[in-house]
Amino acid sequence: MRFNYRLTISYLSLILAFSSCDTKQEPEQEMHISDSFFNNDSAQNSLLTTYLNEKPDQYAFSMPEAETAIQYDFDEVAPLFKQYCIPCHHSSGGAPFSLESYSSIRKRSKAIKEALISKIMPPWKADNFYNHYNNSQDIPDSLREKMIHWINQGCSKKDKSWKNHEFAFQPKIDFNYFLPKTPIITVKNDSDGFQFTVIDPHFKEDTYVNGIEFISSNPSILHHYGLMADTTGLLLNDSSSKYNAKVNYGQLLLIDAWAKGMKPFKFQRDIALRLPKKTKFLLETHFHGYGNIGKKEQCKIAFHTVKKPNRIVEWKVLKNSELNIPAHEVLTQSIIHTFESDITIIGIIPHTHYLAQKIEAFVITPTKEKINLLHIPEWSYVVQNKYMFENDIKIPKGSTFYLNTVYDNTENNPEQPNKKIRNIKFGRSSYDEMLTCALITYSK
Image 1 (tube, rainbow, N blue to C red):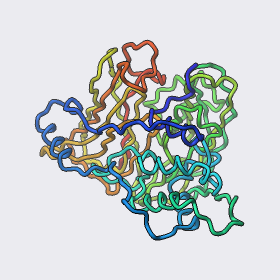
Image 2 (image 1 turned 180 degrees about the vertical axis):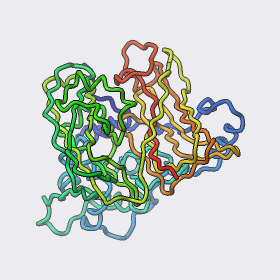
Image 3 (image 1 turned 45 degrees about the vertical axis):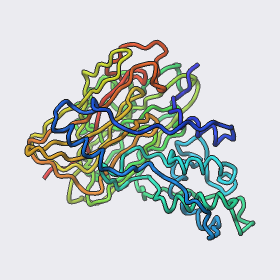
Image 4 (image 1 turned 180 degrees about the horizontal axis):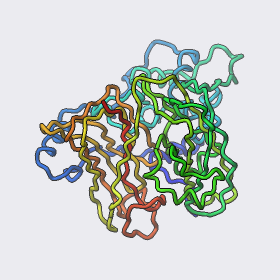
């Protein structure tokens, strides 16, 4: 029987450690990108070589040789756990256990220390030296050291009456509008499955949204959510999956998606999505893996709505539907797109499955300037994210966007989902592959 979702070796080792199992730490793998990662254009390869030679090692982290003389108390590190750990590790979060109390943190302190030293946690796969992101989850080294010192000092806690105190998890976003809850869904098939649900919010006027959260009652059995808006009356009101699954996605407006590892987000500028008065939504729920028959799931979607903003955001979805990955091969596949007008990119969301190893997204302008967008040297299916740029990236007309992804369809890939290795093409099943990318943009 398969796991209901696969995990990277390091991530699985960490979960076993958190469960009080002894694990042997895997040797750290050297992080690099092969020459085949990029197109054969010599100018682009030269730019990549220069970047790799000059960038610092963001993954290097070493503790001071001597322990600090400063004695830390739980009161001093509790805000760090609340900021960096509990957004996932709470009772209804996507992580496999809660860290909402002192006792739960102390119980797993050894594994937490190893996760902090190895930088496995918090999960953030993007190379922060390639570009800067305003939603980066990486902990600054100085704070990481503080948490580790506290653990080394025995998890000190002066206020004994607070021993079993539980954090009151509070989302960072003030959601002020909730869509009607979806029906409770019971998984009936022991494989990948999809459920399509129509949600009619009965908006009385145009609505502007700059923050969205998906709240699942059972996130462990999910592959992803996709939320699409219908502004032209295509969808029926009866949540008929047989009908709505046939709606051409190209006729709907993608407004958000959730996959493993993603957190709620809010645009940090005076920008928002515009949802016209008669908008209906199609929620795609993709159940993943085996062993889930009889399990139930229900989704609640929260919006943060605002007054009419200065800028209207749009999602530009790109994909390579001709994806073809022969059995027993390692190769690079790409999305290539030329912009026909000036555009501003504020975020990027790549998506692929288990065979992907490395991702890089960049733009080449008409003057041959390379604009870095995103570099993920070790892709993980279970740690996906929205990457929101610290600064808006203005792209001139005629520029070409590249998203290059290395796939490993061999028996050497520890994430290989197929027992019998076969040719893989573009498909929605977790055991097929995808190469898609959403650019969060606005125009002039």
